[in-house]
Amino acid sequence: MQLVRSLFKGFDGLLCLCVLALSIMGLVTMYSHTGENNFFDRQIIWIGLALLGMMIALIPDYRFLRSGNIALVGYMVIVAALLLVLVIGSITLGAQSRFDLGLFSIQPADPAKLMLIIVLAKYFAKRHEFIGDFKHILVSGIYAGLVCGLVLIQPDFGSALIIISIWLGMVIVAGIRLRHLLTVFGLGAAAFIALWQFALYEYQKLRILTFLDPLSDIQGAGYNAYQSTIAVGSGELLGKGIGYGTQSKLLFLPEFQTDFIFAAFAEEWGFVGVLLLFTLFAVVMWRLVFVAADGATNFEKLFTAGVALMIMSHFFVHIGMNVGLLPVTGLTIPFLSYGGSHLLTTYVALGMVMAMRRYAPLRITSDDMYLEKAVGRST
Image (cartoon, rainbow, N blue to C red; front, side, top):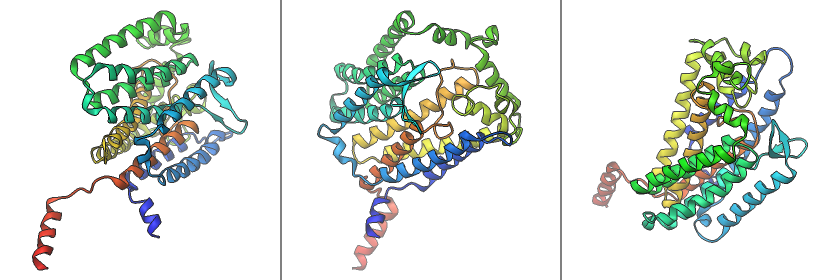
């Protein structure tokens, strides 16, 4: 019993309750009153496995990641997996991004985000006092750039965007100077121009151009964005009801279980449901910020901040994509979208965050100090 209490010392019930509620909301959005519910049935299994992964992730003491070469070895394994998927990976919707294992598939881009967070947290934590040196920005950029480049080749523009967001966010949290930040933005602009000229496919360029005016090509590149905005708007105040979304269930809205699940959710749950969804995500982010502030060392603080950045980036890009404010990049939203790799990765990341709370410094309040003095006087 003492061992169980020790393992679950950092368990955050409110965080887990919000995450599970979001997963259930995504699950029921996949449900249809007619036809088969293959995505619904399989997502139940994935949620169960993700919860198991979170519980297992609560067990280790992650202080071993602060030193040694474990983080670097893990990073090299992920890079090898990203290289291997380009050779033997299965092609789905034009992207060679996953290993097909028969009953399920694994997309290495998702655990690559978590591994990058670990590597960057260790790198910046060890060099926190010297973060003002621009060379550390470049070295960390190489770590992120290698993973980003391999993901972009697949091509998976959405995941590449998240990887860059994680790196930029962690660099800012680590304490980059303003002039260095401006330099990073300048390099980013130059990199985007280079990508536009030499790396992006024509359909990716078309997505970026048509998001400015989806109506210009609603039968082509702007079709998904157009149908998504219709779905979001048609939900009105209270929605059409669970399982009664016409845009999604009648397949006017493609990939409604993954890339456009927010639009399907908004259509069925309406404005009230969207408000609840945003509230739950806000609570998740609040809990992560709270845990990051109380981290035992800079490593734990940076790691938790990285996990928060990963979730927040997915959330904003997915929502922006669904309401026509950002180009369609084929990106899931945490906890709601169908799939195993991203769900397992996010749940495991949260399990690691909670495990790190076990050895966080105790918060001493003024009430605690008063009680301690009172006990001292009585003895």
